[in-house]
Image (cartoon, rainbow, N blue to C red; front, side, top):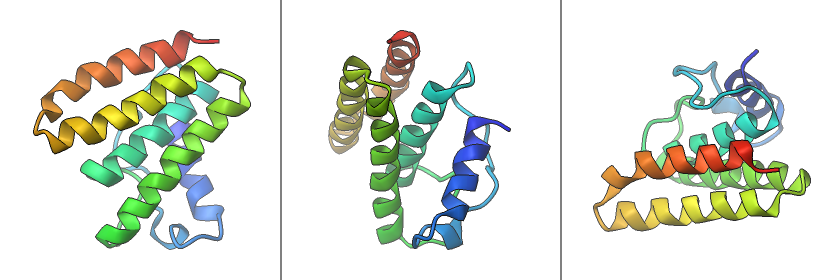
Amino acid sequence: MTELQALARQLREEATPISAHAIEPTGEASFAPPGERAYVLEAVREGYLLHYGESRLLEGHDDDLALLAGDYLYALGIERLAALGDTAAVLVLADLISASAQLHTEGRADELPARWRDAATAVGRST
């Protein structure tokens, strides 16, 4: 099972308003290698997609639920990373989330793929 599939399963099994909308992933996982850090990155990436793109894990939701679910997934990823004790990586993802909002607001979303790659690399090698 991929980290993206595990995340979908967790969303389905939780007793939240999100659960009824959780589906099997419709897209590929974004990050490798597998493991806890990939799970963290997938959660944060899905949060981003719920805010600015198309979800890989939810369907049939309205815009308000998408924003709330996105915030939840950001928090889920950050919480898991914080539990690993990696405050440097937490800062990297917090900065990425902030930069994503700013760059979208400024119409500079084309800069985000490089930011995501850099953040994924930093989180993947951070300990």
